[in-house]
Amino acid sequence: MFHFPMLWHRSRTQNANGRSRLTLPDDEFAAIYAISDIHGCCREFGEAERRIYEDGTSTPGRKLIVLLGDYIDRGPDSRSVLERLSSPVAHGYRRIMLAGNHDDEFARMYRHPAMLGEWIDFAGTETLASYGIDVEQTVRMKGLRGLHRLVIEMVDEQHIALIESFPVCLQIGKLLFVHAGVRPGVDLKRQTDTDLMWIREPFLSDGPGLPIFVIHGHTPVLEPTFGRQRLAIDTAAAATGALSILKIANGEITFL
Image (cartoon, rainbow, N blue to C red; front, side, top):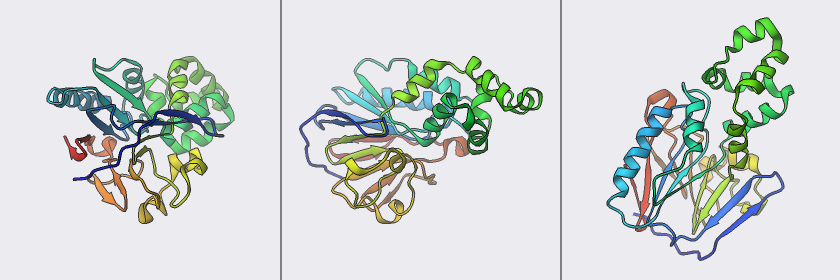
């Protein structure tokens, strides 16, 4: 069981790289649920939200769902995941979607055609396939320029705008929700978006080195795993079918 000190303020700040960072008071929600690294697994995501709504019936008051990024790539239906993220949540719930490195790279590729070849090597072709784009055939017939024209035509720009709107982290009291982690010992105001969306070591070994407890994804684990002042909840849904659901209520961490 974990208990966290109160922090009574709300803010939204913007860092030099453009993504916002949220801070909310920790008395606003009766329960907080967190999910990480959906990676195109829309069926599993839908089932996770159903389980959250079912569980939430036993917890009076407003509830928060925090998604820790990487909604696309690897799994079979990235487009449907983004469509679901565009839809409202159930009454009494708020959903906050944080940016993951895969989401950020997808949006950057869409805006900057020169990145397309590098992006394909990084992310593979599953996301574009979910939009009806056959990458191999298109490149063979029309080259990378033709592929990018097709991307602009077939990918819903509202999905890109949605991704670009995602904040990079959320702090609630001494809890920090973020995709990858933080640079140990570095003040949060000095952390870059790249740090928060991409870091592994030395964060995984050393922890944040700050007076916070970090809940993150990005680095797959077989089951939710505690480290130094941190908890990893990316259970590699695209490979295992397991999408872990963290719940925090009354200062206690449990899993659905």
